[in-house]
Length: 164
Image (cartoon, rainbow, N blue to C red; front, side, top):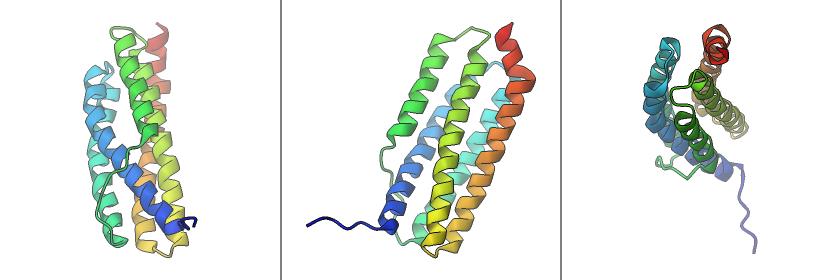
């Protein structure tokens, strides 16, 4: 007999995946902040670290809303993205292109998160959980704002220095 998983199961599994990803990001951002040269990029990483800790708290609220305990499920996507960031930190250490590479890695993380939070928000609405959808939308809005801030840093400072 085939296991007939439903949208609620997929929502819960994806929530566990994002929970893992956010915790991995909290562990990785301090290394990226330390490696960055640009004060603007360092500040952006520091700010996003604080936001990410709040994102974890929001995810824990969503788990509570669906009657589940917060737990992680290994997210291979975020492991791959953060591994690329580690490679950039090693391969470009001392290079004028380091910050551009770090910024690109950070934006890869943001785009992954925006995709996941947008999907989770939509599924929460579909499942009739408007409160969870609101929490997920708040985080999605913050991820989009971070992505825009990183783009601004890239175009105003970091990419020009990488060319020098």
